[in-house]
Image 1: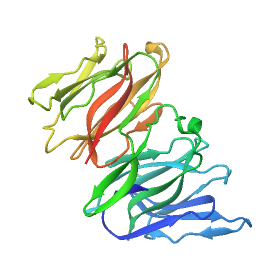
Image 2: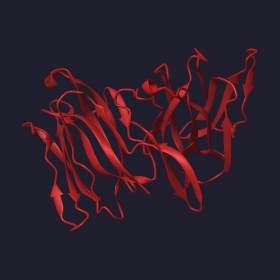
Image 3: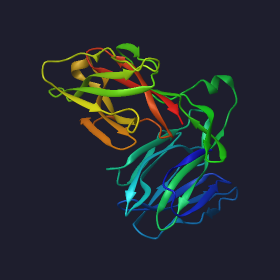
Length: 328
């Protein structure tokens, strides 16, 4: 089980699929108002779940045409404040057919979350909290194969995952989260890994304005033992015309919790995939987006923790980026 993303309002709900999922019914507008599921049984009949959430918003329907051969393997979305409550603001669904359904709702102004199961696994149910709206959503997972060969297969640019325990008040629950996520982006360039540190003090993003791409990134870390600060190498190069964005945090009251962005081929980078846009999230603020929204979307998984290091690939530009996480 992966714990729910979102707020603590409403009542708990859970729904495990007893048969292949055929349709997802979503009511949405500024936020996700409600969600329902329709599955198909062996006789070809349909089973309709309860409605989780309220009646507001407009109704949209996701139809998984190739069910049961096509099934859910990931979700992504955002959550944030709405009317003084923390609720799910947008949702997208990913299947093993590499189809992405959504986004539904409004992505702007929310904290992103995502989880995509590696090959050999599927989402077999969802849970969360709901009242007048969909307050929170999480997933139940199932491994479909135990062969060692399949367990090693991972979609390009998706994180390897492992099972860890998260302690929540007096309860202990198991969830699957990435220790090191990514890198997302291209395969070219020189690989780099800053390692793991107790605190990140500043991130500098170098944006190549003429090329609509991220040319480089540089990070100021704090060492754990003597609390001294030092700068990483500049990952990428500095073109003539660029904008340098400086994101400062204290590392204690405010710290980095996630990134998202886009990557796509860039002619000026030999046609190689390049980071075109990036956004940083802290426990308090959203910084960005920097660059342009073009290409393939990526985001780090949302979990209770903080970023303690970065890794990736770079050459003339920032080709790929990933994060190291420390969980609370």
